[in-house]
Image 1 (spheres, helix red, strand yellow):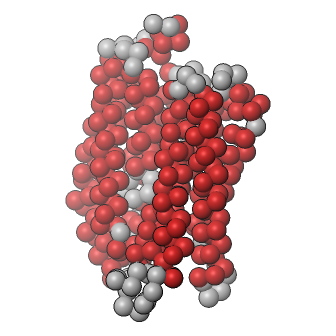
Image 2 (cartoon, one colour):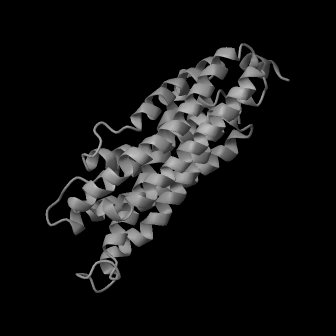
Image 3 (cartoon, one colour):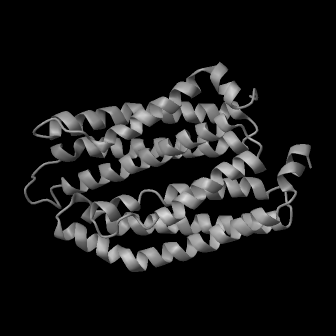
Amino acid sequence: MTEETKIRSKKGGFTGVVSLILGAGGVFLNYLFIFLHLDNIVSAETAAATECRLVSPFFIPLFAVIGILGGMIWLTAGVGFFGKKEWAYPVGIIAVIITLFASFWPNIPAMESKAAVPGPWFLIFFPNLLVYFILVGRKGHESGKKAWFGLVLGMAFILNFINGIAATTRMSNRLPEINPLIDNYGPASMYMLTMPANMVASILFGITTIGIFLAKKKERVRIAGLAGMFLAISAGFPLAFYSMFIESATPAFSMFILGPVVSLVAGIFILSSKTWNKLMGNTK
């Protein structure tokens, strides 16, 4: 066991309690929110004829399943912290990143449909966000700059997946098989093209987010980040431009722009070897 691992492993009782609370609470709340809010959200979106009504019955439970998985990983980390195991810290990092990912997007359809304002999943998101900074700072002894960089990468992770969901939504509503007013695949083509690219970019950013804290070979993590950045901007900016200036009768702001912009910001720090190595603590 290395000296760094010993530092992370000692005094694990309090961290273990927090892990168990976050794990059990996350699992319970994800089940509860689905039973309390899913029908209300879908019904409200259907009544308002929003585009999300077609995909919410699939994606909201999917995020709940991911959130439950995050809760189970938190419970596992808690056992490790109580036992002062060296694997507890990396398991906790994975748990908090997955939980943050799973507890952000469901708030959007909840608030958009006005079925639940503010979004109930913020009860999971914000405690995990606080614990993220405590975990990587006090337990992992990472620098504040690296913790904030991880948060930017995490935002790119979430926002690109959201773009993939939104592209799926737009695509579904423009398929001839679903929309009787459309007789060809032209209106859906941009969304069909960019949806998988945004999803893959999200996965690459997820790997990068976890990797900057846990991977030994940081340069390989950097490759994943670069690939995610290039993929996100190559799909995200054309998607946002199409949504704002071509599909709309008049130019209008599109939430699609957030994913590629945040990805570009993250990419600026990844592109420079000097900046990357500095953020990683001069490790390669």
